[in-house]
Image (cartoon, rainbow, N blue to C red; front, side, top):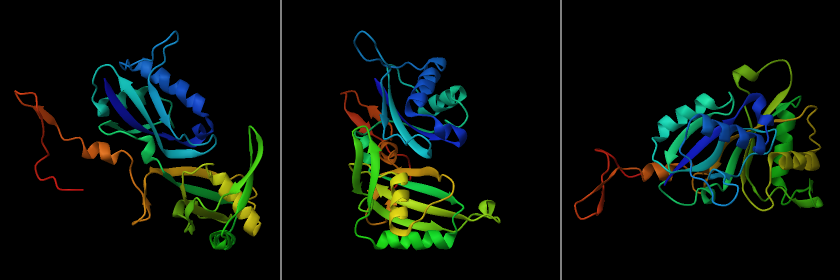
Length: 260
């Protein structure tokens, strides 16, 4: 059995697809691409696909991850191209690696989000961000299946700042761009919870819904303050292994490779 880890996107209008919608589209792509999937046991076998920390419906993403189990080995790059040929535009497989380490889900401990606030001036957003950062706690409410729940949206936020507008987003209409780095905690703090917190501390209320996109997802590096690529350990463990006559696996690194 071979395990392949994939990174995929939700772009444009397809950010409104639910996680179940993506599952159906992806499983159709697996069948069309004739991927030799491993299946679960029981009366209703399902393809072995493990999804990790999917983005909320309505948010875009450049960094969603899943893992599939195969009954026959396949080249990850070729597999990625085959799946993309069968996926809708906007649901794109951007990376594929063979799983050579354990615990992909354990490496998804933080996310980087971009939040576009049309109708909000950069000055107004900066004032709200400063108030949010200065607060020790910011209590917000969210409706759950068990009713309204109150929790602190501040403690999970590692970084929140305003960004300069790119040239293609400048214009007469006010617009602010926020960059948010948030840890994955329980209960999960989502971008809309942070927006609720900005409304609590600074009465920031965008006139139109915010456009939210996840830019990265992975381990949070305390020293650099960045979110690292969760597939990097699988790439680093990828040097080919040759088997000796006695059956001992010998790892061979590419010529000139150095330590990470």
